[in-house]
Length: 163
Length: 295
Ligand code: FES
Ligand code: FES
Image (tube, rainbow over all chains, first blue to last red; front, side, top):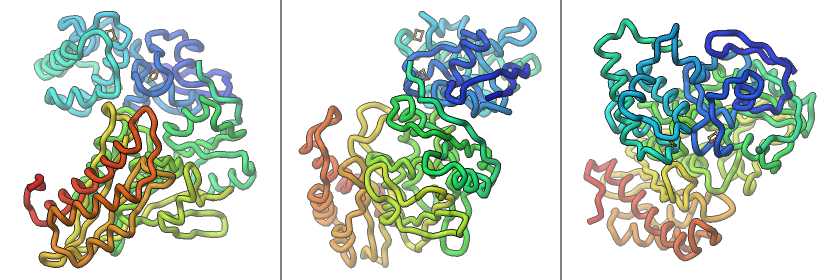
């Protein structure tokens, strides 16, 4: 079957099998390996991408189901050579160590801040609660998101924001 | 790598279209909504449909929470996130928000739906317990029209419902009754996991006494058990700790848990007892405006 969707602002059309999962479509058919693939059972959240601006676990969505929708992966966070404040925050606050969970964490953070520009620590922890990090103990991830929230409230004009 | 067995993908654009596709494709066709129950089953090859009909485009038609007359009507495509965020639903039935907070995680809740949860008919599934507790009814549509079933009629057994070939669950209806409230209690091994045991309670009062009460449990037996004996024991009584203990005892007795990595039978029975007490206590506290802590 054929599927057409918009990935990071660009329309793509591919011939696929109906059973192809979105995570494999993104990684293997589009070569966007920034989206990671871990547990395969919708537990770890490393495969999170945004679909119509909402975080979803791409190991549990069929590529076909994303047809006609807007998908945003970690590669789509940077706009015109400018890092998203969330990416900047992860850099500034050591929001990652091995980096395996990071793409999913950053996309969930992006969706959270688009919805709620000034989240409490509890709201940040709740938002990422479906995603596992085995390195950081989460504290620096929370701080990274807070950094991004602050940066965006100080200079809202430069923000990439929702796609 | 877990990959579903091959199937043909179809996308429905309306309820009528979905039913027409089901009629044409026969008993090897399955509907997929959020996909967070069915796709994992397909990845493990526990489910191997030949045709998969994607109904996510029906969210406009079947994603709603509204009051009509003396009942809430909730569309089958209403997602967990919408159930969690609805203030109207939380005001009428706090049990929904209690339960939704502890169902999976926010990312999964962006996809999973009420209808999908009920149709999966997993004995440990929380919304089935919620709907049983609230005496919900299920609207099933086919090309011949609609029929309305109680939860008891709807759930035929584990993973089995009254939805036949070429039929579709479209709506859940919940009766609104005055002077009532509800609560949900769940114990899980880690945040977002399936319940070890959970218990829902709904209570209605007439002055000082309980006019009616219902308890529904999850993960303690083949079906999400609504326990009639508890309702009988509570009706006409003034709520006390002794009364909650009686109800808890009945819940433990009615439970048929199996031992697994989540706990022994005895532990699960203990939870059925304790969580029933807590859910009843909290429901009553929500009606009377007290704090709901153990006396
Ligand atoms: S790979 Fe998707 S949740 Fe772990
Ligand atoms: S940085 Fe290693 S898993 Fe999160």
